[in-house]
Length: 288
Image 1 (spheres, rainbow, N blue to C red):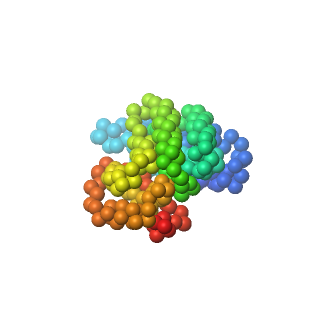
Image 2: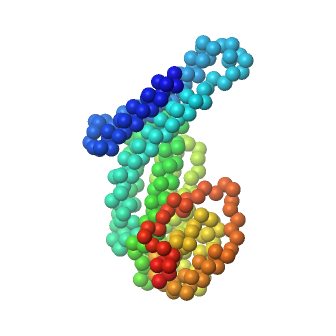
Image 3: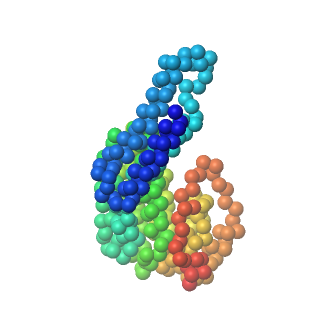
């Protein structure tokens, strides 16, 4: 039977590739992809049911009703299907994510409002996805939105020009983090999972931006690094460049001092900065 599932996997991949060539086709792509995903759970349940019915001796002897190789194939198909649907979401979010941390954003862009509405609309369409897959999909959407927000912070799209701008920018970041938190709590309702930590990362970064006394920057940045040990030198350099008031010597001192520290990593910590690249900027440039 696993041969049938491998064929199913190949056909699902071909279906996705057809859509990537033209997002207008096939018609009802999202609905059919949801069916492909849900079929995986149905197949798994059917396999267990058939084994329970026709392999009674094995069941009585305590043989597992599931077959890891088949379950693995089906879970891989479902995971790929969920990833495909999330790609649809983030293709529609691209324009609005690109507005974050720009002068337009600071002056009152409604980008995060649109991001929240778009994500919620898509997840209304995803309502029929079976729970184990939808739960993972919701958590991944949450993580990825926050990663994209942090990526915008690190891309040096704006440099604050005054304490007032830093305060306004930081407060906006906090408001938007709470807005995203509210959205994903709503989407994750009933899953019994707390993923608030993702949005806490945006708030922690905002604290560094909001700080009014530059002489305390080292303490604030070191607190951030202790919470998020996968932060690299280029992240710190980009964050200080975003503030717009740290001298070259101060940036260098902060980075060098932090490099000498010995951060204890919580074994339960899930890296979030690791995949955020500071594009076309190295530490030397950020220190200028």
